[in-house]
Each structure stands twice: as C-alpha cells, then as structure tokens.
Length: 244
Ligand code: NAI
Image 1 (cartoon, rainbow, N blue to C red):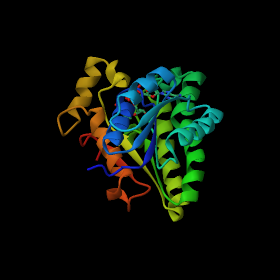
Image 2 (spheres, helix red, strand yellow):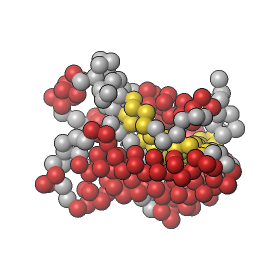
Image 3 (spheres, helix red, strand yellow):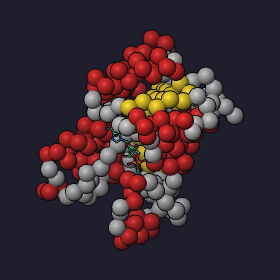
C-alpha cells in the first residue's frame, strides 16, 4: 500500500544508517523524500536511488539560517512539507568528569537544537495548512540515562520534552508530533562499541537480537501515515523489549 502517495517528507541525517532506511521506507510508501545530509553528494547518492521522487540537500541542522534555507529549497523543489523526520544525531561519549565543553555543545547543538531549528520553520507552514507530522528520533537512553553518555542522554531527553510541548501547541491545528526511541540498532554509530559492552547489551534484549535501521523505519512510516491519525505526543520505543 502506498499510503503516503503525494506527501512530501524531509529526513535529516538521511545519508546513512537509520536516516537512510527511513528515507527509503517513506519513499516505498509513496512519499517524495528530501534527503538531508551535511554533504550534498552523499545526500544526492541516497536520493537518486529512491523508489519515488526524491532530492538531496546539504544542510548542517545546527545552523538555524541553513535550516530556513533548506525548507524553502525543499518546498520549491518537491512542494509543501507534510512530514518532518528529525533524525540527524551524533555522540561524543565520555564519563561526566572528562566531558569537555565542546563535547557537550556539539551533541546538544546537533541533537536538540537541530530539531528545534527545522521544526520551528516547518511547523509554521504545517499550521497554516492545518496538517502535518513531526517525528523526532530520540533514544531509549533519553528515558533511562546511560553512564558515559550524559550529554547524549540529556539531548535525547530534551528532545522528548520538546516533542511533547510541540504536540500540545500544534494539536489544535492538526499537526501531530511524536518520538521514536530506538534501542541498540546496528549502524556506524554503534559499530565501534567494544565486544564486551555489546554482549552485556545483548543479554538485556528480550527479543534476542540487535535492531536494524529497517525496524526503526517501519515505526516512522506508521507514525507518518493515516493509521496514526489519533496519536500525538507519544514516545514509541523500538528496542526489542530492552526498556519496559
Ligand atoms: P549514523 O551516525 O549512522 O548517522 C547519523 C546521520 O546524521 C549521518 O547521516 C550524519 O551525517 C548525520 N548528521 C550528523 N550531524 C549532522 C548535522 N549537524 N546536520 C545534518 N546531518 C547530520 O547514526 P544512526 O545510528 O543512523 O543514528 C540516527 C539517529 O538515531 C540519531 O539521532 C541517533 O542518535 C539515533 N539513535 C541511534 C541508535 C543506534 O543504536 N544506532 C539508538 C538510538 C537512537
């Protein structure tokens, strides 16, 4: 079923990993997808392989001016934005006492401010048209915390509070905002984790496997589509049952 036929979606951090899987899944559902990455070439490479119409855009989501220009460019090329997926994210892990100012700032700037930058621009337009879906990719560590990730967990917990506030502000205008909180997903971001830590994590996953980018993309597709029309301000955890 192509339930997103005629819709336009923006996916930030769409050049690889979870973002790429989301872009491909929304495209399979019929949406025109704007793939956003810091490098235009990498964004284009993913966009050119999409099933439906797509285009690649270069944008650093931490730059609010660039986000304003991005949304204008997407609308000019693909049309008004119906679905915004804030997926771009980074880690700069360290224990609290060794976290540098720049580790804190870089993670908060990309993961939290980045979502604010894009959402503020897109929300204004969605409100006028009285429809839209905003889907923010947080993490289970935003719910539980995680030693060695105080900056990352704070950014993801912040994203959850941000989304719930936005959901309440925009509901009357027909715009829905939700969070997807993945557990451990096999991507470049998690590839560097030491074997011992992987084994410990594995033992905490009732479904007995690590997640794939497609597991997350399926949840995003559902939240973007007609089946989720009565769902807003929620955190959908996609983690094989790790956090209950
Ligand atoms: P990844 O590192 O493979 O991909 C992240 C993407 O974001 C890349 O395309 C990167 O270029 C882009 N990006 C980073 N900073 C950016 C910026 N300032 N502007 C624009 N794009 C930027 O990571 P992965 O694993 O695909 O993660 C995607 C999202 O899912 C992130 O928000 C991450 O925090 C979240 N997540 C990942 C989990 C995992 O286990 N892999 C678990 C929970 C959440």
